[in-house]
Length: 419
Image 1 (cartoon, rainbow, N blue to C red):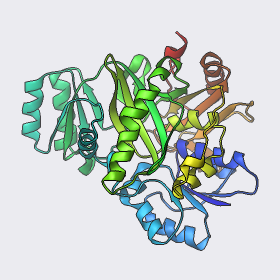
Image 2 (tube, rainbow, N blue to C red; image 1 turned 180 degrees about the horizontal axis):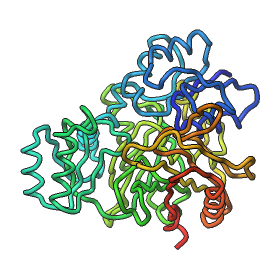
Image 3 (cartoon, helix red, strand yellow; image 1 turned 90 degrees about the horizontal axis):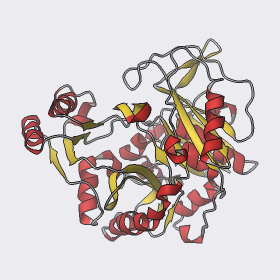
């Protein structure tokens, strides 16, 4: 079986790792990949947003299944391009990908399907947005409408912080066109949790939940990032899973199908577990990063088989099985992140890894034969154990052997689960 994974970050390294470990005889390509991925797959020099080049490559190389990691190619319509050529691809089409591509579109969909979420208003006029914020008061949440690599959300504790977030998005355009419209939401309180599901338009198969850590510093301080670490399981919140399935995941999947745009791929619900139950913070249309790094090592079912079942609309035939082990991923980031990171810093890694530990490459490249930093989030240092406590110990022990100047990581990933 020939598989093409699109992307080059930690999530894609985890996908390639999982697909590679499942069955012998698979030929795995990754475009563009990274130095870690190149050790277990053939990296192809095509960028993830080169959707027509990727389709050409898949056709010429007779690829059996293409798996899309990041959101950008999905929102550009890579699935539509592949479908036009009768090429098998896992992921939602361009219309469905608007669930992630536009916060305003997602909020309207939640309203239509009666999905619990925060009260909101959308604004494309700066002065109107500012007036609204001053009227409502802080704390308040400001979200760039479009894609912003996980950095487009500000939880403003003061009116001044909210005004700064509006300035950045709407006037200074630090997110480009993604910030020309903003969604302004009430601030939700509680504990965050991520629940992902495989969806084939009819059947919804929920995965084990995980908990991401967005802020850059310990104790959830500092600006939001793409994610500084994750853990799974989230035992103290798992009682909410039936409600999440029945009030959130199924209504969205069934609602979109009823509207004539059946959803196929990963449906990612970023949730706040409030006093009144789960509410949706955001929907994404692909595996989370770093959630994939903790979920995939726990998955005891062949991932390629599940994905093919989604593509062929026979997900009802699949049983998802999970290992009882716990998994923890700690992200190491480069100096400057979540602002512009320092690139080209030499990296030293351990020569070998123990069982049940992985180092997933994200922002790495090579320069003159030396592994160097090439992005904000550099590695996902990941470990499994019988419980979160043991998995955390192993991950942080391994982190000591990942060396580069200015390395930053949070020291409290998974701490809530063991306190």
